[in-house]
Image (cartoon, rainbow, N blue to C red; front, side, top):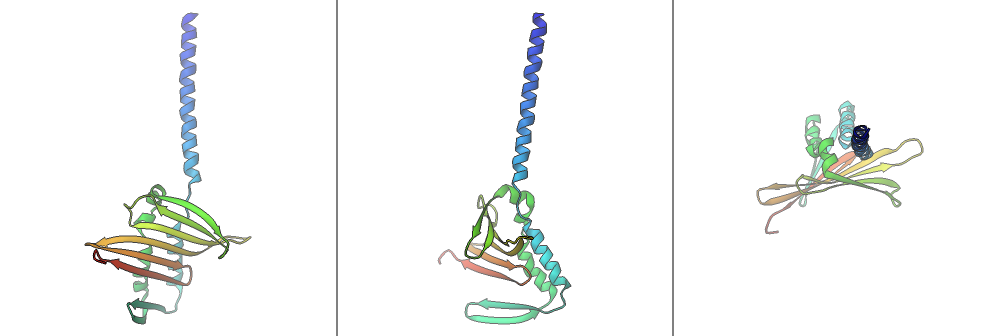
Length: 180
């Protein structure tokens, strides 16, 4: 009888430990499921498809210092510019582990802002803001803003990039040499 009580006690404690680890695993999977980010790459790729299906001209405007220029470009040149926005850091596995999301409702613009900030400086992408226009029927992504930083030799290059859905994109590059 004494042996049976000990065996029963061991079995109960084993079951309790096993059940606790299952609960912990369930809690971890729930917290991972709650942490879902907007598919930024998909929004941009969808807009690129829209440009591919459009038969109009694509105008490139450049400003460098005081010099301004504009010219129509081929779809391939547009795709090269658009690829600046399709960064490897936006891959869901990397983005999920290295970025933190905050969100707010901007009363001035009447837009929801989803702000993603890099947790460290190991990624070239530092910040992403997705602007969403809310409505009663569906929410629409209006604009995507990104900041990335790269180094070329001893020069730091900061890119401020805006993708306005179905309208335009802007890439501003700011070069900072060590001397100023």
